[in-house]
Image (cartoon, rainbow, N blue to C red; front, side):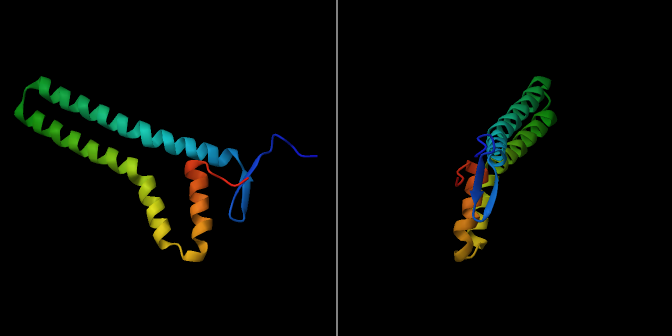
Length: 113
């Protein structure tokens, strides 16, 4: 008798509970969306505080902080793309389908059943 509550997913020769890639995919999506928004929001707050202070040094420091936060937001947003690209380049041709399949399984929740 099959247990309907124990849904399995697989990538390559690995088989695991389907909730693991679902959770990982959700976390990756949250990080890709929330972290850049929060970084830009806090950067705008820093810049706004500097402008309200009306001091030249504070404004320059606020601008530098804002630019650093924007760069950090861009890096965080593209981390997943860079990881997929690097693994795709490093993996040999015979293992590419297995490795990229596992990456798609855990990042995009596209797993074999």
